[in-house]
Image 1 (cartoon, rainbow, N blue to C red):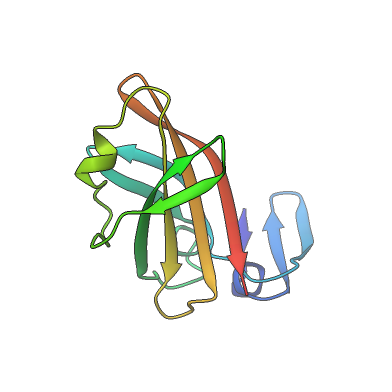
Image 2: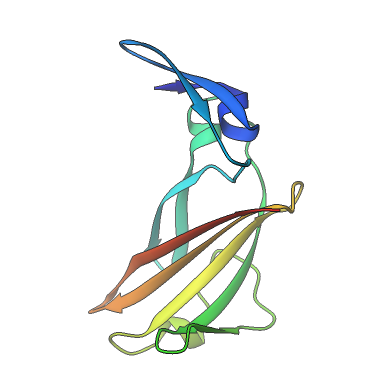
Length: 133
C-alpha cells in the first residue's frame, strides 16, 4: 500500500492498493507509528510515513512512566528522554506495566502512548493511544 502525505498528516487523503484507490477519512492527524517493541533495552517502532516515503522522519521526545493497571495511574520517570528503557522500569517484575509517550518534537500535538506488560523476560505491548490536539 502506498499512502499520500495527506493520508498520514491531514484529515482526508488517499491510499493506493494493488486493486485500486481507497479514500481515507481521518478524524485528526496522528503520528504514523506502529510495530512497537522493546528490544535490547530500547523502544523500537516503525515510522510508516518514512517507511512508505510519504513523510520525512520525525524526531520524538520520550516520556517514560510506570503504570498501575488497577488504578489507571501513570507515575512519570523523571530525567529520562531517550529510547532506552529506564533502569528502574527495565528491572520490573513479572506482570508489571510500563509505558512511554512519544511526542513529535516539531508537531507537538502529535503523540503516541504505548503501554507494555512484563511477560517473562519480554515486554509485550498491551495498549496504544494516539493523541492529536
